[in-house]
Image (cartoon, rainbow, N blue to C red; front, side, top):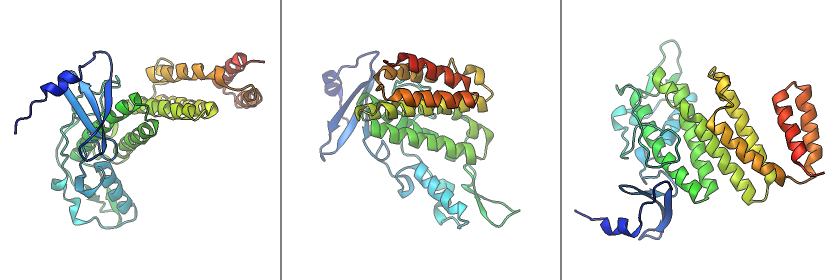
Length: 299
């Protein structure tokens, strides 16, 4: 069947330098997200997997593997559907979580080898069943994560912060399960480069939702927590010297600076207490930040 979408594209021109997003209502009355790209339109579901698929009768491949991990942790024998040949990703996605550029149409690069291994490996030295992700499993999880990346960037533009939090939290779980259970070193590390970006996007959504609820203090807490998480990330990767120059850290600090003047005067006492604790703990960088906050508050 040939369906020409020229009329659709002409009715919604592509605007360079802007993330072109809209909500539409489908024929069945469900809302869907559309993103206008230079060469077409990307359409996604609001909930569930963005392409609407249910791989292996689960909401996503991640949920499928997490369920298998839970069973392995309980020492249960995996069911017959553990056959790797049944694991397939119907989505036409790229092979990685794209480099953060807030462009849902960005190209992505492939990762690692794709030789098949079993989903579960039996440890001969122990009676319990251990859980392992093969190279093919990790590739499929990366491709699926790209779909969620496209969606949470679009959702941020639409200011649907709750769903951004949901999808970024979900993609962080992908990084965690691959890092902890991939059979190959490349698959354990290749996605870690995206952790700062996803962490930053999640913090932006948390802070924005808190501001929408008129909770400035909660917004600051979300940002502070993310900044400390990023500090730990860079330290654990022997890259502490890159922390201050990180684009993600700079963006969060800029957002934080814009919120400080909005704090009520009643926060001054609490800031003084936090400053005193920081000095006692010899956390002088935090103490410096808190002093700056105190100076910005009205008397």
